[in-house]
Length: 232
Image (cartoon, rainbow, N blue to C red; front, side):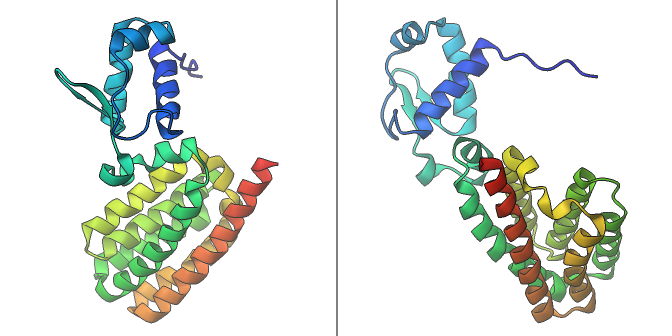
C-alpha cells in the first residue's frame, strides 16, 4: 500500500487560482494584483505564491514578466490541446466538445490507417485487439482498447495523429472512471472494435471509416450514460 499524498499550501493555492482564472474572475489579458497584496489576501507567504504562479505559468494560464507583473494568459487564443485535462476537471461540459473531435479524428485515422498500414502495423494491430479480449478486468480492457487506438494512429504513418490520440486520452483522465461503461465486458469491447481492425487489415478505407463511425457512436452513447448516472 502507498500512503496517500497530502495537499500542500501550494497545491491548495494553485487550485484556487486556477479555478478563479477559468471561472473568469481574473479575465484574460489582465494583470493580477501585486504579489504582496495577493499573498496577504490569501494568507500565504510570497514564496508560496511564487511557487503556485510557477505551476500556472507551466500550465499555460499565466505569464510573468520582470518589471511588469503577472498577466492572465488568453488560453483560448494562445493555448494548446495540452490544456484539455485541466479544462475538463474545471468543467465537465468540455467532454461534449472532446467527443465531437474524437468522432471526427477517429474516423479519419481509421480510413487513413487502412490506406497506409504496413504488414508490421497490421500485425501489431492484431496483437493489440486480441489483448482487449484477453484483458482480465474492466480497467485492463479500457487500457488495452486505448492501445488499439494508438496502434491505429501509428498505422497512418502520421505522427501528428499519434499526438492527437494521446491528447484525447489524456483529456479523459479526470473523468476516466465515469467513462468505463464500454469496457465492462472484454468480449463485447472486442466485438465493437474488431471490425475497425479487420477493415484496416483488409486495406478497405471506406469500410474502416464506417466501422469506426459505428464504434465511436456506440461507445460515446455508453459513456454519456455513465456520465449522467454519475451526475445523479
